[in-house]
Image 1 (cartoon, rainbow, N blue to C red):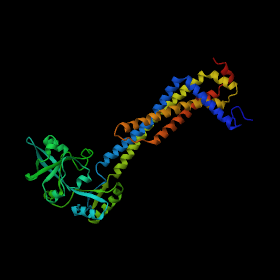
Image 2: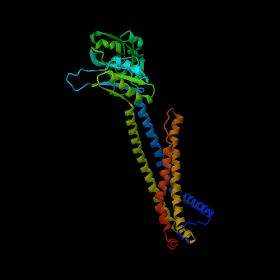
Image 3: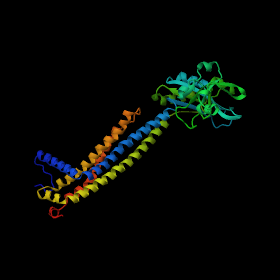
Image 4: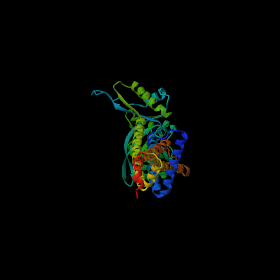
Length: 416
């Protein structure tokens, strides 16, 4: 014989009827306490929407950071000479423009390359003032490798390089310092060491501000590498920049470039060949960590909402003691009473969870619909949010439901 706490297992119809009745009781309780239940569901909706919006914000921030880093250069790889052996009599073994040609011939994935030669100079900026500038000798392909933005004029081409034309392009900040604006800078003359005149063909800036942490400084002028050789005693280059066809080629090309450079120089010479892959990976991990922290904060909101559900259900139990006594008197089991109040808590949490999901998804979709921004939307965050809201309802609804099921029917009927 089953006890009074055991479920009725006679037929499946009895179970269905019991579940239907329980849900009806939960709905009636919701209708009789609309304000309290609605406010509790609203708190749950806010918590659920917060989870989705935090995931959206985290993904958006991650995409922004990665795009900014990728803007520094398109599939860029850069190499520089670190030094030779520790012997005092060891002579330097720097890279040369011949290394650029060798890499272009032996590494098929390289689609653009440019050596750089760094020169420091001092020029007149008008008004009797002078300023120190950085002059970089580069090839015409440098603008492609470094993904530069030409703000006015043009970048010097292969004809300028072959003809050793004394032309150059300057940074936006240098143009503003010397001429007050960008456009009037084009066509003006800058005299470098010894009074050698260079015509300004254009004004540029980096695709993303590197705050002076790249080879390009605020006051920088780019000139053809072939012309920069007039200012250097050797054929050594400062750095070499490469661009490969696809992102998938970056890592294998990095290894191949290092092998080519090492094979062309002494065994003890050390060359650094790097790419942005590691930096992108680190940035992605940082963005994921920040997103996780924000989601934990959002989960705290759901936790507070769960406590609200428990409080409102405890108050509901107190106000419905006589109803519980009547139900027990006519044959309701402890299990049915417990499941009734647990169902009410779940209805509140799930209702709030669904409303929160609708609100959380509506905001990024609205931004997509009314603007040109394409905010990333995580379907996983919506699934997690509804699961968590349901679990919160079950966990925090258990205590009030257990309390209601344990009430003595005789004492409940005498309760005023």
